[in-house]
Image 1 (cartoon, rainbow, N blue to C red):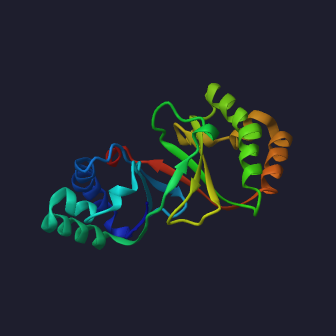
Image 2 (image 1 turned 180 degrees about the vertical axis):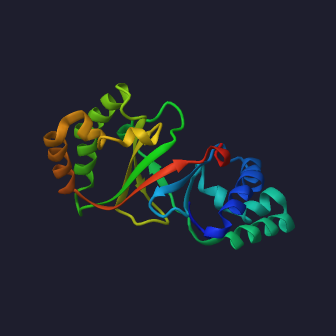
Image 3 (image 1 turned 30 degrees about the vertical axis):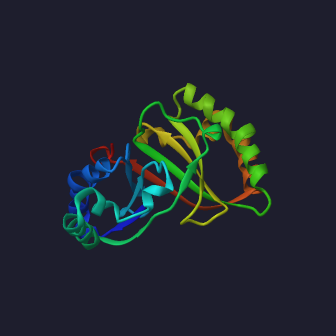
Length: 216
């Protein structure tokens, strides 16, 4: 879920997430939630990720109504609406076979949203698996990154797009260029980037910081 928060309502929105939204989510069985704010990108855009065990979770009354009852649920929904300019909810499916995940939640994430060229989906997967993933696995083993992840965007988003995310434990780890540059040098990184550019178009790159207080 991407949420655009009004600049003068950020503190109130975060307080609601911590003290009212998260308890309600836990009450209906949501097992985890990761909330991050854009640092390089829109600084008032917040990304919230939770697992969806089944589409049946979307059936029935709104989540806050189920968790808190009709009146309390409506009050919480109204308080949240007052804080935001807009919101978008969509499905994103992590590709575990194309990822090397962090050992613990990482502070920093650099996410690149890519649009795959027509008819190139399988070729792009092979590019990630055979060309990029071995480099990122080695980079994690050497402590240059905390992890790497690929996910496909589904219902609610633009189909045919994927996100690739590199994780770091601190912003200083971004110094010196990308993981590909650090591991392969300028020429090696340029060669792999050129191969990827023939298969996909970069739509945007966003650097985010995880907010531990409103994540669980």
